[in-house]
Length: 332
Image (cartoon, rainbow, N blue to C red):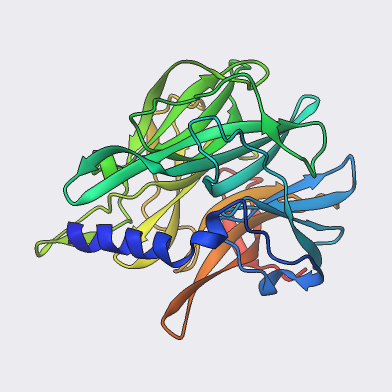
């Protein structure tokens, strides 16, 4: 089963190299409906300064909309340093846009496929890590800051997101990938006040194996899945700290939620028993529309002619009470 999982990862990466690369940009399109866009890990920033929505995700490209209905793009906005560890043409996964203080920040996972950091079983692990770029504008361009490395070079990390905890300090919350540790984790690391680097070392929040809802089968034994993916944090109306994150139930992409007993990143984190979204939806985030309504952005997995297609989707959500409740699909 492990060999099969490694092969699946290689297949997914190998099928779409141009989608993940920042050097190949498709032709600009206008008035594109959301469900006509092919995008993994969709992240939407509702920017009050420009009264616009900005959507990015895996591939690192940007789409713009004034109403969530019709989108213009894609635009290339990430400007990396070819002399850095990322190399000349890094793959970009799970990009996010955050307005923090007076700047806009681009959190993303960058992979240099020419650099190998480890071998686990039959899997050769490439240099992959979360990193942060900065811009004065939501539409970019986003450029490197002082720090060349945010997380250890010997660890494959991904899906970094921003959270300001009760101590007033900014943190990156990210996944330490299961391909190396064989039991994926979600961790935190403190960021410098201007997000230009990290302070100290990462700290474990929880492991994939703590999930009661994720499942996989290995050598006729059924147990928790090893994948952690796409953490995103929020506070409920009762000031409860929650985190949505994604794994698998066998071969079905699925999103769950955990809540912190202490109300801080340090937890302990208690996993809900059941998934929070329908099957084949995941890597979600929450945003407030320019009109003030809360939505969840996720992508769905659809099999078309033997090929997996990933499409951005929106759901109405309510977390005014003690828990996050996912409602009906939202059609802009």
